[in-house]
Image (tube, rainbow, N blue to C red):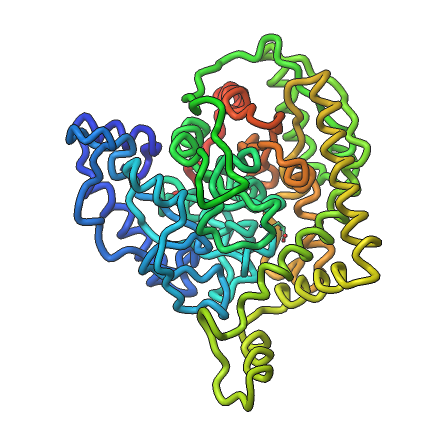
Length: 482
Ligand code: GLN
């Protein structure tokens, strides 16, 4: 059962060869065992359901037919609000917080038939690239338990890779779906900004945050995304996706023009990653794709701009955690200001404090133009670079991460080296365009990810291209589920 893709599991439930209760229990038992194992487990989950939801979801048509996703269990990153279920965004300041409402995207997936399996561990407020910034402990990489799973959606990625969940929801602000997918040898997709509602997602940087699927294969990513997209009256930045997300079927890439930007594929990429990337380009050519050089001249400045803009937005979004409304409140404070400062002192971890300080500084009067304004201008330049590149090519290919999964603790003392993990993924986030990571090989026994990015709303073509490559590469991720 565990070896079935989510698509196949849903089909088996629909044709009656598998019961949704059995399927749920198989995953629930695996997820609960990992949680119960404590330090001996992967630490993927911060909460696991006790039992399957009572009622099998019926299709919205009201004809009693089972819903499309047939009770397939879904793991959900901690930062999605789920009514009556802990939603803590990996932070001590929200420890035990149970929201009164559910995020739109989780609501939609429930209506489509998924069953909430558990909430997954993550970097605090989604700030990180290794899942070591969680108040609930680090997550381990199922390929090698001495290594990180990537972040910030590390719990979701590791759970899917290890077969503790058939698929999962993550969020990506600068790479947090794609980079952990890459490090764990699974598929992760960040959709076009605005295509999925952010309502009920505990905010990090609102102009960048976007929910997306983490799955074992590209077809599952398409299937999950199909039921996530769409306008939501509760999120003014959401819009109607122009077409239905189709299940990918392409096997060839004839006539597809792909561009490889020197800026994101040359210097700084680990040799083993480079080798797998070059081999993948050769496969793309064999499938009929034309591979071209393209330029993204401002991409090398993306990280600098991101680390002004994301902390600026975070400093504003995180101002709401004051001990009054949600979660933690410091005891024995003398007066109100003291209560605020003690709560924030005790509740936030070091990385979150660093970002709040950076962001507050960047937005302070007298510096606003020099930092925030300038970073916004760089962001525009980066979006223009992509627009120009997409006049000559259909997609852009890069490695997803410059390195394979690194050792636990290796980068925690050096924030800059940690930030470099997102070197290849941040430009697409700033431009708001969709990008997918698929596993494309191994280096030193660890997965390497290929990133494919396309113009806004090119999801269907992007998924097709990823699917054709996935077939040709036939990556085997079963070792991580052993
Ligand atoms: N690693 C990046 C950061 O720490 C991106 C995180 C994310 O995409 N949520 O900000």
